Image (tube, rainbow, N blue to C red; front, side, top):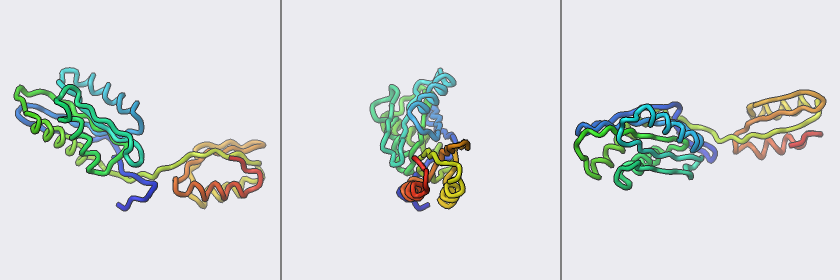
Length: 199
């Protein structure tokens, strides 16, 4: 899958994985996300569902280049949980993904290296069960134009494969559309050449 400047890899839908070691169970949940608020809501849901679990460790990466990220050990020894989870997201080259691993303690201490391995394996398992997809970065724009410019405007939008989000046609027409980031400049210039078009 060849990536261009305006695409990134993420997962298509939530997926799960599990890893067991010495009686401890590590349940991993991977989610496609686009904001920290989404991550928090998934975390809240899992903490309620698994209220008797000892730990709920997590990591996420957001943004086209994964530039926004966080990892949390939730009471496990420092860097033994969140970091290995984040490592799996990074090594798969994914972004806009969160992985939360719920641990049920089995009575036997696993040690730092055992924990790192367990969280890594659980996260890897969840991603193994996920469908990885390539997503285009798009930008949204609004244009205003007189009704008699309609045909020209629609032709430019169609030629550049713009996705129309909403439209109103009155004396002055208004269209909101989404376009692939790398085509943004070309389409805006083409639209502004049409008489009466305002961005």
